[in-house]
Length: 147
Ligand code: FES
Image (tube, rainbow, N blue to C red; front, top):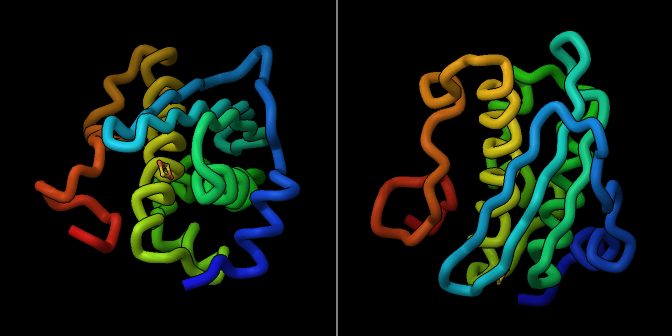
């Protein structure tokens, strides 16, 4: 399966690349199998994610999914961002080849990790709200769509 035009567009012109100096939350996740790393920064004002930036040291699909994920949560409330799934990111990109589904899982987890960090900074235990940030190794039920 070839990459969709949207994937190619977000890979070639990724949105929201960079760092946020005074971020409200920073999340970093990696996939041990491919070795790719994603770092996500969010700025929260009130209950809204006003800014979201990322840095991805990874494959083209990881760059495209992080780019799309930042676009999908920017301007949204924390509750809406918590509901973002890798499937929604893939749909917004018009799909990914099956071997690249795990890259979208990384994007979902990077956002969750940034939200976890945000709660931790407020002195709130993030796990009951955000859940565990688990790597997708297909041995347990995650939402990657391949498990
Ligand atoms: Fe590792 Fe895509 S191959 S994130």
